[in-house]
Amino acid sequence: MDSPAWLQDSSAAAAPAPAPQVAAAPVAPVNIGGDDEPAEPDLPGVILTMRLANMGVAAAMIAISVIGLIGFPGASTFVLSLYAIVGSTLICCLETQLKFVRVMIAVNFGFLFSSIWRFLFYLLLASIAFSYEKLRGQVVGAAFVAVAFYNTYVLCRYPSYRKIREKIAEEEDRRIEARISKEVKKQMASQVMK
Image 1 (cartoon, rainbow, N blue to C red):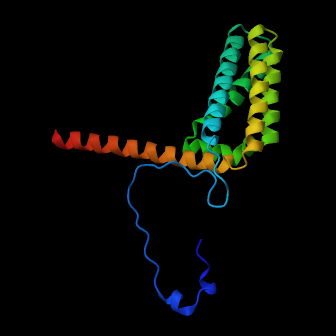
Image 2 (image 1 turned 90 degrees about the vertical axis):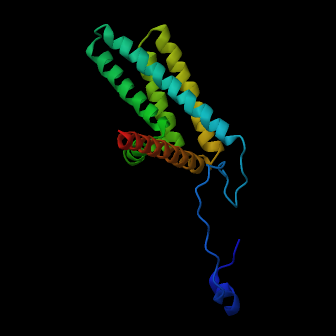
Image 3 (image 1 turned 90 degrees about the horizontal axis):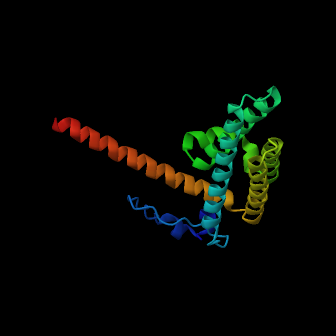
């Protein structure tokens, strides 16, 4: 690591630093820990497992809630089903990592980035699943409880989780933007050829 400019002698400070080279290169693996933290090689796999578990349990919750709405339930079950659908959709949006959605969730639903508040939110959704009083509700409720504990474990065990998640999201944004740019160029070339 370079020392600050005020610590360097005047002859070293007079020499200009070489300009960094910026080139378009393929996306390299992410350094999880940064310079001062040890890298945790299992973190990307843990994040992928957590994202898939969150998406799976949220999709199951949406499915059983929609099935519950089809049978014309009472008012309380109707409201709980709608709440479960909205909450599960929020989890799905959080896990898709789309830039515009991610920013909106971070601003309006910041509790999902805290281990304690996320745990409580997942337990709330699990209690809704248990209130359906059918086997599918019990299974999804138990899955939500398990995922809540797993999420809490990951958020507490890996403090660098948030940094790596942001880096992965930025890389995904770059890939999506590159793909869109490529498609636009292809379409423009086909229009010019006509």
